[in-house]
Image (cartoon, rainbow, N blue to C red):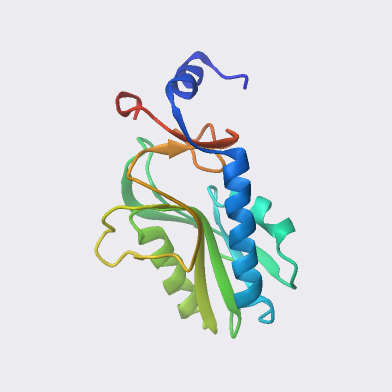
Length: 186
């Protein structure tokens, strides 16, 4: 990858937790499970921007049933990579009334972003709401946060990671796998 000195150092020091091949295999498994559970429901897949773009983009060709896609832009991360208050930037542009909705995000960390998205969908009278994440970070969730995603591709211990949609200071989302940052780089 062509990177500035700062990001090249982070990338080179990081440890690959899941290779692209492992992520793709996990997405295959998740897509099979989704096809069984959601295949006849004509769902709306709601991408949580920005992190959900890569996981959803790679998941879509694996799904062999009718669906619609849309987005929501909500973030709980501030400038310094720490979890903070939620920032709403965009609501879906589609009516969710009576629909089955699948909220797709890159990671389940504190659970607050997914909880906010679920509550939004319920407020808009979605028939049912599911959650799907590329990565479930096994850690204590914030009070009121989502404890478990309905669909998850991979799990890992509590480390700061980037790649496959996950960012490091808004960069490295395009890294071809999932990488853990060494602690002094966070």
